[in-house]
Length: 433
Ligand code: HSE
Image 1: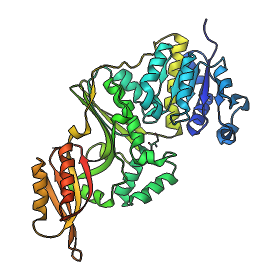
Image 2: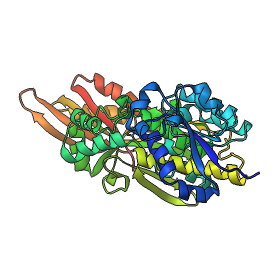
Image 3: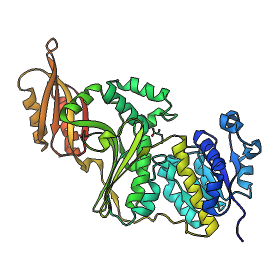
Image 4: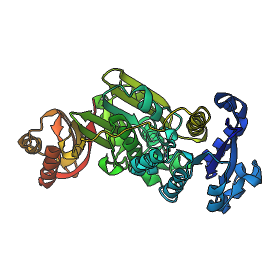
């Protein structure tokens, strides 16, 4: 029998969930046209403190419950939307929703990155859909393109700016010469950073998102712990100055590559050519460059966070689930794991490197450093010497290398640090061309 309406239950009433509730009301007519029946918000599971939020005051108070048993027992709910973030209790809520036969929609990158495969298996067992378009890149379509439009491709690489907060900070450091702390405080004042800004700054947020994208792209389970991760707090305004001199920009890139069943995933600051497309993505914008054997290069750009862009993705997932319910289409299967793929150890990757070090300003220093690099088969492509301090007789040396193995570079850095003429290795940054 044709359903009279499709019911939605919302968990959370933060800014994103509030925007979803508003869109479901404001766009009720156009959304109903796409499903041939109304999509109706039936219940919102809130915490006591959510009830004083501006979003709550705009809504019918009958919709709210603080009691999770009451929420899950609501018979009119077909689709449960989780928008509370963090691993717990979101994971338990999603499992409970799926196990009770509800389709689920989530924006939770941490839960999907850590438990996506397990939730997917549970959803397949219960013949419901698990949708998570808003978990990566806010409103930028990424999950659906990997599940549908790009599925015939062998994806060789993903190069992504997928954390708006760090991209904002790096843009301010590069364009306004701000130091890291000032730029980070500005990002926090503007409300860009996560509740725990370390997740943004240390690359953890980007690592969750990369794990989700790489899992989809390579049809393999890539876990957050498989992603090598370094943040941006070591960057100094001088690194930006030198990057410019060498013709590069500095970005926090999330990189995933696949070749011969070996998967490489890493998040860290990189030098990228200043005339490349990704170098021009500034402020809180996200951009995801995908390389496939059939499609070639495809670039997705947009606002990677925020209430409205995220609501765009979440409501699209709700409509897609509602269409499956209304028209009986789809099996809920959107992604199948292929066995046999292996994560490449970070020590095996190969890139060029930028090194900045403080050294004694006297003869033979460069020769000692280049001997160590040479002993590890690391070839130098250019050298700059700047910031000579005649009082302390020190100088700053900047070295760009040709491609070298990470393991060799780490060994060489250890030995260079031990040279008496080297005061410190101030920074080293990988180069991606
Ligand atoms: N903190 C994230 C960012 C928000 O800066 O991109 C969305 O995941």
